Amino acid sequence: MIWFLALSLFAYGWVVIPRWLAWVKLPDADAPADFEPSTNLSVIIAVRNEAKHIIPLLQDLENQRYPTHLYEVIIVDDHSTDETVELIQTFRSGSAMRLKVLELKRHSNVSMKKGAVQKGVALADGELLVLTDGDCRVGAEWLLQYAYTYETKQPYFISGPVCFHNTTSAFEKMQMVEFASLIGVGGASLALSKPNMCNGANLAYTKSVFEKVGGFAGNENIASGDDEFLLHKVSKHFPGKAVFLKTEKAIVYTEARKTLSSFLSQRVRWASKWKAYQSLHVQLVALSVFAVNFLLFLCVPLFLIGQLPLLVLVTAYVAKFVIDFLFLERILNFLNRKQYLWHILPLQLVYVPYVVSTGLIGLFGRYQWKGRSIRNA
Image 1 (cartoon, helix red, strand yellow):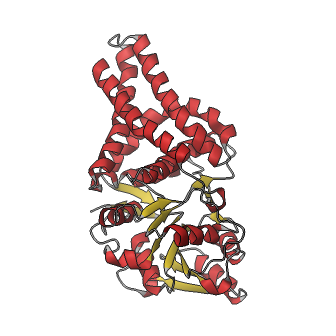
Image 2 (cartoon, helix red, strand yellow):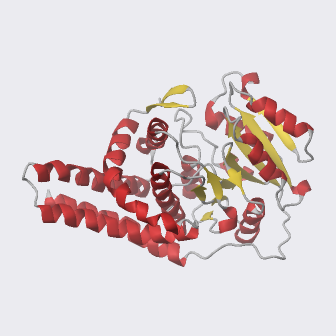
Image 3 (cartoon, helix red, strand yellow):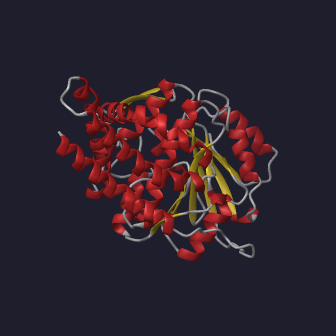
């Protein structure tokens, strides 16, 4: 057991430490003050039951410091049962922003986020498609930063940073720290040209590359993963053409889950796509994270029954803590959330059983999300 534990910690460090170094070396991509964009953008937002959040997001988009003639906003409603569509239509009637609204209920056999995004892509006039979610907030220079990276680096896929805001409880703050690690790993992996994860709340890709790689073909039956599976496909066909947008002005903000049940449903939804990963290095990263947490989870009962020395248990947890601390200190500093770094301590106590349980449940591909019972085929 001790040798397996040591090997898993070594593999975990082999994954995280190079990404820590890559993040440190990754330069900021802030657009200069005299930058004048020329790219036509289409913002695509797939929504379902976002009546509480959609208007603030639309106001953020209307207030972008980006030429109004160079961007449009496309909202695709996925069978909302609240007042989402009515609120959008009312906002559109009083806005000068180019705003298109498409309702999936008018299209037979089309639902879920992948179907909504595909409809949005088909409707888009822009060269670069920028995506976020209906419960997010964006800064005034969000689109400007994407345009600058696109025009200077000519990537086909751009992943942006996401952060939680309005975090008041300890539960929400621990979520923020854990979520920051995912954003950091995704960004650093792109810097290493080993892309593994991104977040659909903040990303962009060209319309042409979406069509060239066949969109979501091949994983249509997996409800989650519209973002990461597309990243993997683009990286496979066009190596080096996916980048991370590292600038505070491009951060998209959303809220942590308020209840334990909704949090677990979200994480199971994310974990449900792991078994469909085809890239070997992506599988190995996921496996190393799961393995070290699973073995640490087993350490506790083994210690309690006298099969594992206390020194080994403490050393293993301290080693993982040090690795996580080094990495998260950098990521949280970038996100302006460094004051929450101490939440890594209680997070270490719950993170192990949480990752193990959601990982195992996610393998079955069944979960609840936004009023739907979902099972991956």
